[in-house]
Length: 281
Image (cartoon, rainbow, N blue to C red):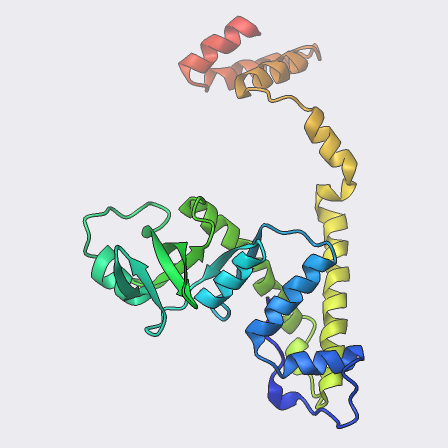
């Protein structure tokens, strides 16, 4: 999800008709971002866009957002703010995220995981409604004694699954970097709000066309249904069976140097693999 345009850049003329798309866009930009996000998600669902999870960064994360998305049948995977003003209940006591980490988890006897530091289920509250949230503390790469906090309202997800799901959000960051570095998104001198919207729209369309061309040239998935049908038709073959098949295919070529290469290759393999190959080949 992206942040709305700055309100300072909006100059709404008195004649702006809010029944038009431009008028609705101006109205959205002047409201609170969390309300607009929920409105856009509802609009996407009405258009038939299906989703299991909504991914967002700490800019949007709050018990209120978690609860409202849950009411729409959507689970969240988000980065949590380490704020001292937002509290969660853990073992009948209330903590901020920082206090939960330093006062309870860090000094507990619980061992740290290999892919994450700690994982716990806490309770969030919004307008009297309590609901569980799984939080995962992850070590921040390149920063000693620093950590990031991920959260999901789908408590059945493992910490590894939550980390993997949130990693998918990284494509948004790569889009911003590409748009700024190569498409000059942040070099605009446009002063009007409609002009800024038009420039962002053209930049996004340009990026989509470039990404589509890159997919056509590099990604086998552009073969469409044929790619998936070929994958479905391939049986699951064990490594040793695939190796035997490859060696038999090479031997059928009836070339002396191929036999020599095969024998040298087998000689470098472990004894248990050599015995299986010698019986099969």
